[in-house]
Length: 116
Length: 108
Figure 1 (tube, one colour):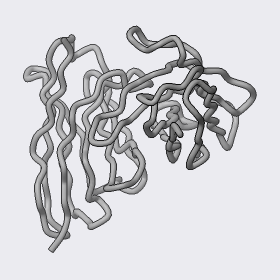
Figure 2 (cartoon, helix red, strand yellow):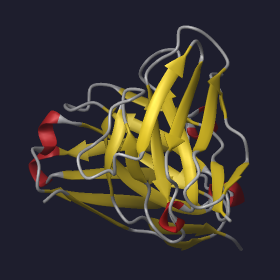
Figure 3 (cartoon, one colour):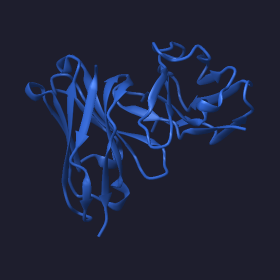
């Protein structure tokens, strides 16, 4: 059974940093692109970033370029999102998703709140 | 930037057919995907590559494509289909991803 379990969310002040983690199991992690998708409270889905199987290619939505970094550790079957210079508008539930052009499996999400 | 446009809301009575459209603002159009999201839950993929249905998704869900518009059709709508629906595609580079704004389906 495919499982994606996010962790690392919480309350952080504007300008602060946070690192999200996603533990993957039930599939061969090294053969899939992976993505982070977020959803602000009461709003729609927004794709944030994705990363190729070997980590050699990474893409970001314009609003997080230069502030967020996606990376993975294939030895640990884990995906990460390093978030720096956080803003109030980054407040959202962050989902980890398996990326096959579509997102066929999702985690349950972790809430990030940016507030003073 | 590449955008996908959906109607904010669609309402239908039980047993009727619901159609939710998603328009891309530019060519070439990439494949489209559809997700159902119920309150407090993660999204679920219901249609991939414009019209393919994943295993476990009821046959009443179908997808179609014409020009730069794709449509999710739910035939014989049931109360349990009330949810938010999102279309998604790749951006013009093919590497980034983009979502439509979402459509709230209300079953009257």
